[in-house]
Length: 143
Image 1 (cartoon, rainbow, N blue to C red):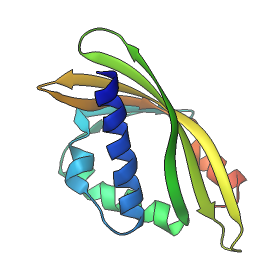
Image 2 (image 1 turned 45 degrees about the horizontal axis):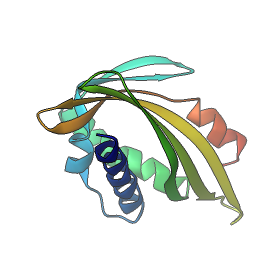
Image 3 (image 1 turned 120 degrees about the vertical axis):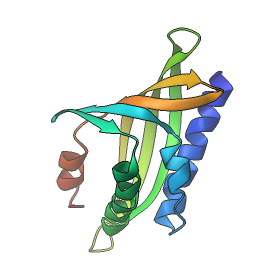
Image 4 (image 1 turned 90 degrees about the horizontal axis):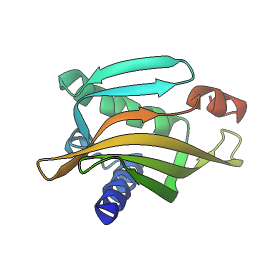
């Protein structure tokens, strides 16, 4: 299962970078999430549904990252914890590269904790925990 989880996130990374290049895989993103999921960050907790609204918001999210001139999102490392035969925690250490409007580059490293469920021979994200991404982007002059 460790190899399957690493491959799941390698594909997740590839979809993100493909979207930055204008090649969106909305179905791939939708299929990465459970029917409902939780996002927690320093600003609170949000519950989401994997529905038509979620599908419509994916291109908007991709456009946001393109608009702030994201150049690359790369996985540096993944720590995986098995909770039982169907549930896992993956702490993904990301490296991101941006170009500010003045053409200077900025790199930001951050981590995201994902909770995954393995069901029907597929991994699905049912929760993720992040820091305050907006504050970090603002601190680095990207928004």
